[in-house]
Image 1 (spheres, rainbow, N blue to C red):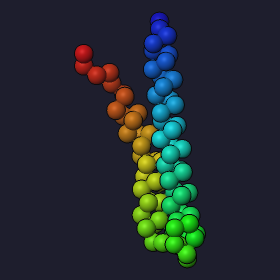
Image 2 (image 1 turned 30 degrees about the vertical axis):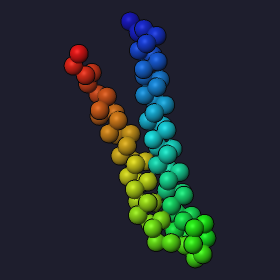
Image 3 (image 1 turned 180 degrees about the vertical axis):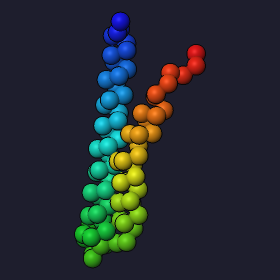
Image 4 (image 1 turned 60 degrees about the vertical axis):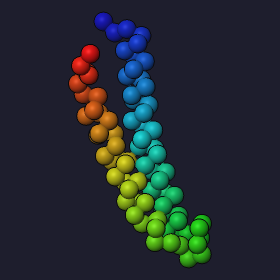
Length: 76
């Protein structure tokens, strides 16, 4: 039987996983603008490339890490 606390916990976990995905995607987009655009330096800056890779890693691996972390309940 599900309790309201269980439903709230799963809803919050679902929201957090999606926020990690969205945050990683925004980091990639921002990094691409920095790398190829004139946002920080005219002509772009190379620092955007590693940040784009980091954003991709966060976007793809972050939700997997969270799901693995929450797979088993912690010992009480």
